[in-house]
Image (tube, rainbow, N blue to C red; front, top):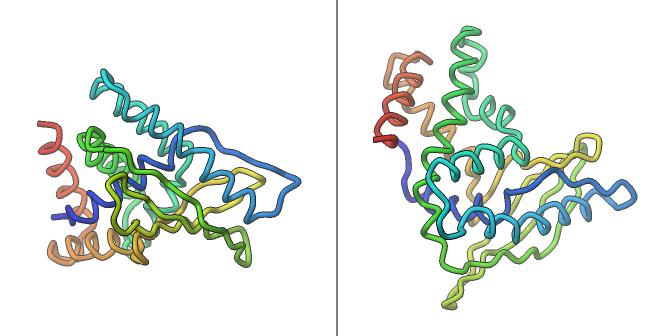
Length: 208
């Protein structure tokens, strides 16, 4: 149902730069603070999510906390659902956001043991009009080879920084997921309930 290649690539993105509390530096420029936010999370991510002896239950807990603290999952989830958000009932919206978060956690939690020494290097950051900054970085492989380009869209709300999109080699992870969810909805008669059923089924399989 969902793209596994993108999931594997974005796993390292989430692992390497999404752990710890929000960081704010009021006296610094927006782009500098956004860059600091990403840089300060990388080392903590590796330590917290890839340590030996961490149980699956603990990884689920840590990853859930990671998403809630450092990603604006509600904004991402609503954007991913696209125009179907406006046609969903209140009950469907509430269940969708719950399932969306659970799907992300369950999808990635089994792959935390694949980390093999990749390092995140921030190249630069650029402030955009409004509240957003783009932080440009690359994931460097310990065995050499071309690094993976990873860019982050970071939103600043009262000096609280949260990630709202990630681009791997120029491809938006949110846009990719949006297309996949739209395809599932269309194949179920343009019904959001069809997507909810597909998510429930996928989560159950991943929990087996």
